[in-house]
Length: 476
Image (cartoon, rainbow, N blue to C red; front, top):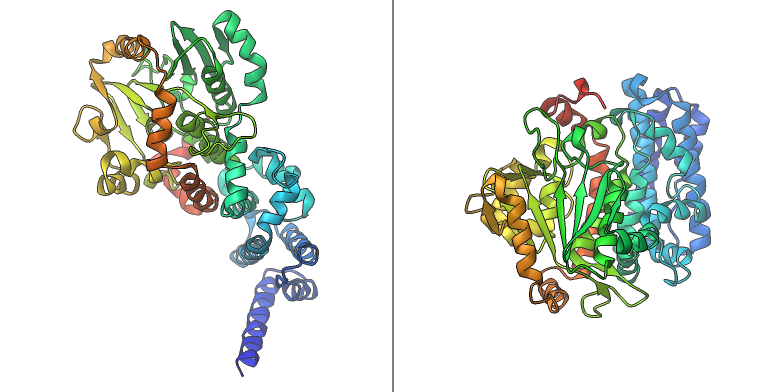
């Protein structure tokens, strides 16, 4: 009886889905055929991949028959939502059984390290339809954020499933901790000249300090797809540099009338670019598994595991020069720092509620600094922390007058390095193994990849940006 009832329920769902697609103007026969083709995962990789590809391609064909999102009727949008949701559930089912197999095939059984940038596209070549192609992503990247169907959500689903598998997920974390090839190539220039300027980011040596400066003055040193790669490369060079012992992160001087002539640490994610569809989903993952995690853990070198227990990283202490404010992603950087020097007028916020996204790994880390209740207030209710306050001093180590921040940073660097920092890497690892071992980070990112993907393409994000940021009136 139970089997009969289940079969009847499935038939009812199929009829309802077919009717939804028909009301949108899609061919009834094509819609019915696609609905019936929804695969059941058997455990046989080849068979499941073939069935999945057929279903996902069929879903893409149905979407292509609908008008573009901005001009769809409510029935057409309902049909698009149904197709997207059914395909995503099917991908989740497939990857629950086969994520490890897919990852091992892509990495030659964990013998090759591949960054997420390439991994998600290679997955789509191995199992067509599992993740979007470059062409599909490029097509949507030309649209405003609110006009996208969110094909990149499938990248988040794939990465979440890979990271949920311990061996595969740890291997991917290590791949993202490897130094970028450009950093290795430019390392000799830095050793010789003591400076490499990429434009959006600069790294320079002052004494025993390697200073990384973010330069995006038009947007108050906000982060976007134009700044991220260069900032990560600069950070890699700073960590690899054999002539320095400590790294500093700061923002450059800006020209904005309100802050003219002042350094600003970071305005967080570039909300104007986000609203206009210029921030790809992978930006979040490259950032938090790349540069932020490298500052937290150092660079992975060779094939030895980057896990703290194996000690397979090269790392230096990081110090932040906090001028004016650290908003969103700027505050996230502070939680990966070993030391923070701030101006007495500076403040920190994590305005995730007003943006509609997850603030990187802040949900994992902020509680360690200010406690669970204050962390929730900051992330879920927009609480602001003044640096010169009891809560602010739980994140910031030294508070000085605004015009003395740079001098205070130089003094702290001298104090750190005057007798050498031989034990710095050892102490960092010892703290992390108790506070946030790499496997804990892996599990967090498994959740983050999926949830952030849905947040990034949520209608609520657009509504929040228009309400709190007046995004529709701002220009790139």
